[in-house]
Amino acid sequence: MNTFPYRPFESRIDKILKRIPALGKLLSSLFGLVERMILDLFRKIDMKFNIYTMGIVNKFILRGRWGGKVIPLNKNISYDAKFISSQEILKILERSSVRGISWCYCRTTQRKYETPNCDHPINTCIHFGFGKTLYEIPFKSYNLKKVSKKEIIDLLEECDERGLVHQLIYFPNPQFYYIICNCCPCCCVILNKFIKYGSPQMVKSDFIANTNLTKCTNCGTCETWCYFGARHLIDNKLHFNSIHCFGCGTCVSKCPNKAITLIKK
Image (cartoon, rainbow, N blue to C red):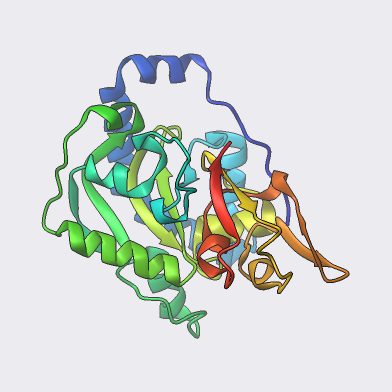
């Protein structure tokens, strides 16, 4: 897997967005409105010229300002880990106004033109009525719309069991998001292209996987489910590359011996 170095968002525009979150929320909302049109356009260009348009645009023009931030589910986090509301998916949702659950652009488009890559459900994207910011998460009250809290939890837990990666799709930097996706590496534009090419930008969660070696039997299940290439069996012994770990928690859900948890970095 190609690696894409983490880019700190500390430019003048990021400092302005931190002082004026409403501006970032507006930009995030506007970008979210045209995202599908942009993806359709990029797909047509890719097909015609056999290039990776999104990667080129994001690397040289947007410079990582459009991508996905990995966020884990709380049940995969070590029980004694101390984390804040902006670090875990259910806490983020509890403090965001959710417009509803809708169809996944990536899986729908893939199945429209090709044989399905997977059997994962289509309605897995959680939409917001207006762009959100992680700067405000600790201070906002619970506010779900059109879908119940149980529906949200059921969806996320099903996606977790299926090994899907929870992502905040962001713009203009990882603090501002307009949709939460549950992504598979075979269909998701952001996740699939990141694994292949290291771009567009994906931002790691605030956690890292920790393996209890007394429980680990070196069965190799976690290697199969680690999309980022952080876990490998070498001579029947588990080797962990912390640099490649994104803290998504997929290995936690899939470990048959419950030997893995997410701990705070």
